Length: 254
Image (cartoon, rainbow, N blue to C red):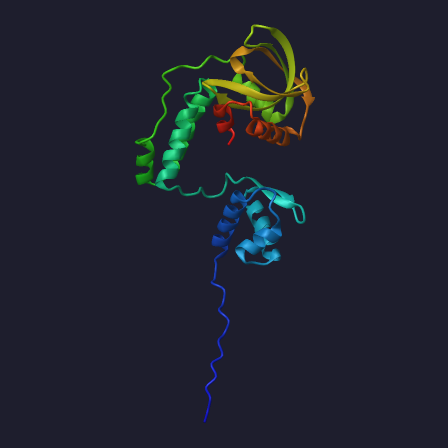
């Protein structure tokens, strides 16, 4: 009696074009918490470490700005010269709502940027999606205008990005005036007013300042680089865990 032995062959990996692999690598780097190790990327994409290193070099040659190196992890900074991502219908609605909200902040430079960004986005979409963008269901309108900033918000944003210490005159809710020297970390909207999140050198602690109560902004030449991001994370974590912070304030950072 003869026995038939069936030997199964291992399945071959599905072929993936280089273009598809590069696109998936970009997606993986966008979604991962930076810096992401090459070993993690290789495992997620089921390719070798050597392939990951070669593909990162290829992306850099195409114009992607990727910080880091082997052994330390990689951070995707920008990829403006690569083909744009596609958006589904709900993503388009979310983008429109977000940009329209920006246009309601009362910051003239951001309001102009809102319109430019929508025009650029519309020009890169398919005709059907461009139509959806132009006639989006969602929008934003503020019927109660917030207080006007007492300093130039654009200069304040630039100081935060450049991680440069600033000084300004400040009047608190009780009407007491003071001179402040702070490390600007970020700007957020709280209860219809915009606030600067900063490290205050007068108080030697984190503090928030309403922009409408700030005056005479001066950007110094003293840098606190590269501490802005970790300081901002620490400040936000404190707000989240502060039992005395209002529920609305905690929700902003949840």
